[in-house]
Figure 1 (cartoon, one colour):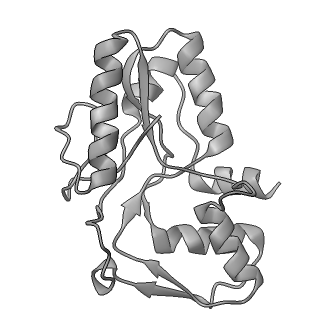
Figure 2 (figure 1 turned 45 degrees about the vertical axis):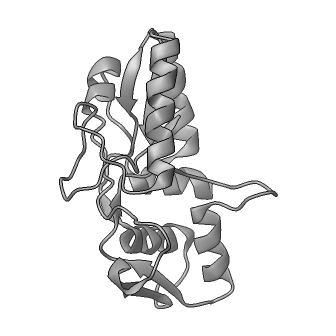
Length: 181
């Protein structure tokens, strides 16, 4: 399992064949891991993704953090200029099972059907879970001083996976509804 943080550029819907240009150490380590794994195990399956879902007692997830803040009626500042294609972890595992069962190998992007900002994701989560969205404030990532560079455009094209499996990836509302239920 790899990441969507392998590209540093404004292009949307990144494909498996685009050159990797990780903007930070995390992305570099994932890129190196992909290289080592595919060299050592040529028939391996590498999946690039960005998933959401319930976290664990050891680590909360991005969606846990948003839900917790909304429950506590805390103000959330969410980026309007950082884009991704999130997929529910349950949907990701379903797709992974199908890729494995059909003998897929190589690099595949498995991501949600919707490209949206972190801000839009939080708004949709609030809607599906029935929380008021007035505490979700828009902000630019440019206003934060992160220690490491962060990509602004992380949307992944799942076209290769969809073609391989002959099915479409689920959208964010479907995933959030499944998460809620």
